[in-house]
Structure formats: structure tokens, C-alpha cells
Length: 195
Length: 182
Image (cartoon, rainbow over all chains, first blue to last red; front, side, top):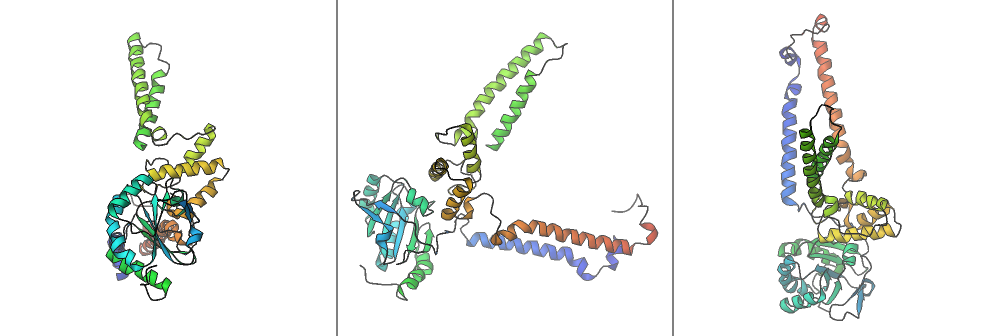
């Protein structure tokens, strides 16, 4: 071994060291990536594609329905929630205090929930939604690729999904993600008169 | 669950051993011991069956025959539960997993192929829903990096060997010295 090492160039002798540095870099990147990304988040394949068609009963008038086609023409947010979902309770004041003032239409999708429980929940916490629809079986949820609550979809006037938030909105991600996306849709002015 | 399945397999084998024909010279006492052991193993088998994943996690779905059930199980094993993301759809007890199992079952009933069902789920939940990532440009790195690394390693080893054989004096190459300092 010693005779071979004597012949080899400096580069060859340093090769194991370079390998070590590469491994450390990989490890460092892994740590960085894990701390800056929510690892359980599954990016939605729906972004840039038409929102799935749905026709769902209204929470307060179950004999009436609302369908995706009726919502065309104006961008809207579809907020998936459930009375069984604790995080939705945390998100609720943010919907009321920070999303509603944006003036964008806010549709609440009560997902896999008993409508009576949902009504009680809304009665207790207030109703920030422009319309409330129910998906008791969770079929529409599957079509939207919902796998937890809350989840929120931004759909543009043409019915294309532009953005999906998995988990609750916070002041930070409203400022950094939602507002720029809404601004893209409404032409620089994120704020529009409430309908 | 894997541990339990393995245990079940092992106990199954032990059960077989217990029923193996006894050597002619074995006495009655040994037969008794073996029978007792077999009984214990049967109890254990029944007990473990209650906790094995096939029986436990799956809600009763009206399969029309065994083949359909096997197909369903096979498919559900290839799909990931999105709630408990380290579990497959067959093993997960999450509410959404139940819904998705129902969906898969209904699609099977309506004559959809396994690929169509997978496509349906991928369109909604991304490739992530598949346990095995599909081979496509975005996953080349994932699929081929191990082979590339082995290739690089082979290249480096070959280079080192070539240099060594060149550096070593010709007569020391063959025959190899048994006391060589490797």
C-alpha cells in the first residue's frame, strides 16, 4: 500500500476526503431540506388544471345545490373544513379576520361531517363563508385530492386551480403565498370591493 | 404487522413439525408432549389471526370471490395512505383510507383495470399515492443514482487495480504472495 501511495497524485490521495465532503454536503442539504419543507405535504396535481366538477348541497338549504360551473366568472377560495377538525378552529379566526377582508369569494366545503355538527360549529364560531356546501361522503374531497383538513384551493375565474394550501392559513403564508397568487388573478390589486 | 405475519409463518412451520411422523422409537410421553405443543400452537395461531393485518384493518367489503379479494389486497398494498404516510392503503385505519378503499373497490366492480384505478388516484393525489415511484424523467435521479454510484465505484476500483499492477514489479504479480499485506 505504501509503495502505491507514494506513486499516486495528490488528487488520488485526497479522493476519500472529497468523498467525505460530498457526503457531509448531502447530509447538510438533507437537514436543510427537511427543516424548510413540510415533508408530509403532497403537492397537488390539480394546480394549473380545471377544478373538479362538483354539485353539492348547501349546508343551510340541503334541497338546493351549488356546482362548480355556477362559480365560474370570478375567482374564489374553496376552504375544506370539518367540525371534527381542531386545526380548522385555529384557522377560523384567520379566515374571518384576514381572508374575508380580501374580498375574494370564500366557499366553505364541510368535509366528511354531520351537517348538524357543522351548523353548531358555525353557530359557535361564526360564518366567514359566502356559501357553505356539504360533502358528507367525502367524494368531492377525493376528487379534489383532499387528505386532511383544513385545505384551501384558489380557483380562478376560468375554473382553473391556481394554488392549494395544505393546513391552516397563517399571516405569513397569506402574505407570502396567497396574496401574490390573488394579485396575479385580479391584476395587481389583491384588494377588491367585497361583493 | 410484518413481525406478526412472520411469527404466524414460523408457528405454522412449527405446527407442521409437530405433526411430522414420529420416529418409531419415540415413546407415548413424547407423543403427548407433541400433541400439547400442537394445541398451544393452534391457540397461538388463532390468537395471532385476530391481529394479522389481513383480517384487522380491512373493513368488510362484499367481494364476489377470493380472486377479487386477492386482487384488491394486491392493489391496496401498492397504494399509499395519505394520512399515515408510512402505511399502505390496505393497512391504514384512517378514515380517508377507508373511503379510498371503498372507491378502489367500487372502481373494480365497475370493471376498471388496476392501471385505471391507479391513474385515477394519481390524478388526484399525485405519484405520491403509489408506493413505487414511476419511472419518468423526474425520477431518473432516484432510480438510476444507485447504479451510477456502483458504476463510479467500479471505475475507481478498476483504476486503482490497474495502477497497482503497473506499479508492482512484474514477478510479484504471479503467484500471489500468501503473506501479502492487504
